[in-house]
Length: 323
Ligand SMILES: NC(=O)c1ccc[n+]([C@@H]2O[C@H](COP(=O)([O-])OP(=O)(O)OC[C@H]3O[C@@H](n4cnc5c(N)ncnc54)[C@H](OP(=O)(O)O)[C@@H]3O)[C@@H](O)[C@H]2O)c1
Image (cartoon, rainbow, N blue to C red):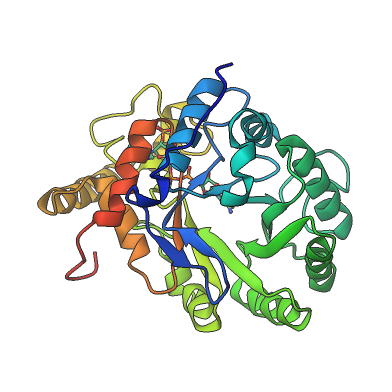
């Protein structure tokens, strides 16, 4: 394995800009990098490494993981762990690393959902896989309708008290439960740093439900996952389904989703992007970032070229009207 990575000394003057996460002390890059796909044990390590280096060299300080990212489960965290040892150890304090627990991770009653047992055991495993002493941000990955909210939230508070995470976030919780979590965490002096949800041109749920507004009004950051709708909002599928694409793999993005109506919509968006002298991906990311309360877009990338293109969203022109 090639050693001696030296980060670009111009990484903080390389086009990235940073936004304050809610009313916290933390600044996040407007474009963050997600490890859901392309960082598993099934993916070539050197490609994952090149994407990660490219990200950091361009000011992407925030990497987002979860216990079950891979495949196989846990292997994206292991990839980050290898990268920490090989490349990023000297830069640990320049990185803002998150992980999550909430979905099925190991068999039996303690490897899923929102119990104290699961969250704390899972984070302990994640830290080992990532070769980290602590994560910057730990999330409850989903709302658990059966575990008392107090149990989940107190586990999150205690995780911070134990020094295993510096900040707490939640993902995909309904608005009512989010309000409860916000109040609980605030009362226990561990304010909710950030909320993670899907927001993109094809799915505006957090705007429609008032979730984004709740975050903006209460000083909670908001980070949008799948801002490119897993690649639909790029040039990837405008002329067919490439054999190396996420849709061709067919697990999380299925061919049936690409209906003639959707394709026409994507082509219309692409025409608008062309009129703006932007790629569809650039425009789609800029559209998410224009919302009041959005701190960062959390992109995936299967190549450094894709990531390079996505970074251009920082320079996108303003929107005269909504799309
Ligand atoms: N909290 C949650 O429940 C949750 C759920 C989902 C995701 N997430 C987080 O959000 C992150 C991002 O999710 P995502 O991967 O679905 O994000 P995304 O940015 O919407 O999609 C990424 C995919 O789009 C394609 N792509 C990206 N940039 C492109 C470009 N410039 N041109 C052409 N194609 C491009 C690539 O697909 P190909 O592989 O086909 O090239 C890439 O893998 C995840 O890694 C994870 O950290 C969280």
